[in-house]
Image (cartoon, rainbow, N blue to C red; front, side):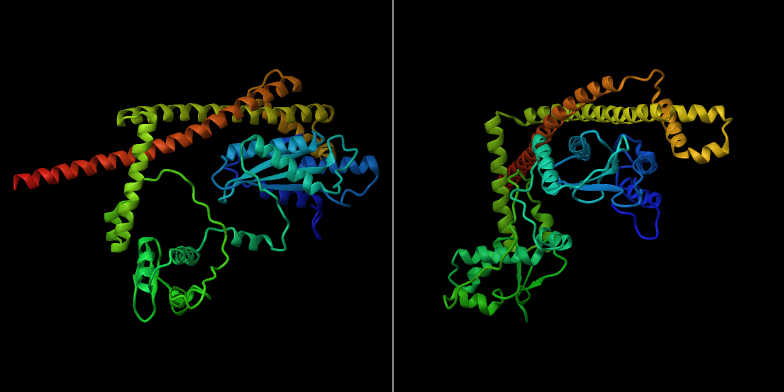
Length: 457
């Protein structure tokens, strides 16, 4: 980060840190941590270090880089905001080795949780600056991947720098469009070698689509705002071309598509009547009936494998829910204390560094002139005293004792996260299978009532 034209260092630092600390993006400011500074006054402390560096070295503080930033993104749905925040803090601690002040801000306003990690270009002792080195990008990626692997998260395999812009990358990796999904269904139907075009349309219907014949052949589906015309699917997918493929007159070349993966997770049964009322056709009803039988069979298999009755599942589900609450509370308390330790360590250092200046300020009778000359130091000292009061600290602990407590809490929190992740997956399975069993039980009861009514008549 350089100084922008027409702005001061103070304005540039404030702009960068204010964006990163935006409370609307950081869960009301809860997902912000700092090292070697107070995140509330980080821009002022960075500026103070820049000025001290200039005085010590004689170099212009506005010449060169004033701060650095790393943005670290995570796969949607794979990590909690708290775990992502801790990963960001671990990365900054290990990459900077305690030589630079930094702040970590975790943003949750997008589907992909991501960290903004900003550090001062000047070291804590104000004698040197961080120098970007050859291959630093690879070093950053390797360390980030290592920490994510330690947390049992996925990483990008064989990353390659392409020619696309970030916006293009987002489009290419977005959720497949309705037309792309339909083209995939058509490719699968053609792979089954239908004997004529009507058999081909029957396969499309079984996949959950309704076929509309009119001036133009089109397809509809639950959740689609409008039907998709076949002639809008692109080259190789118009009606004439597909008829020629089915007749064996030409070969079909599927359009290149993005890889789409489906999670192998249990699913609840489909409410067929609701779907029919919403406009789905007979083809969808037949497909959904078969699909529901498969989902109920998976539930029966799950119960047999685990030796569960319905009552056993209810008891297990209740126990898991209670354990989930307990683990979540444990993680929350650990995170809160970790944040307190980070703040305490920062303020203890700041308090010691600025104590002499503040004592001199008091002896000067709180002189306005003295305040103007030493305002950054006095602001930092007051912020430290205020933080001690807010945390109820009467006797300052040593930094070493806080580091030991921090390491213990971090280990406990990591273990609790791993247990919580496994527990939530089991709880989700139980919830789905419990709902499916209840639907199966109700279905059997309705069949019995219908049979009883038939016998009476």
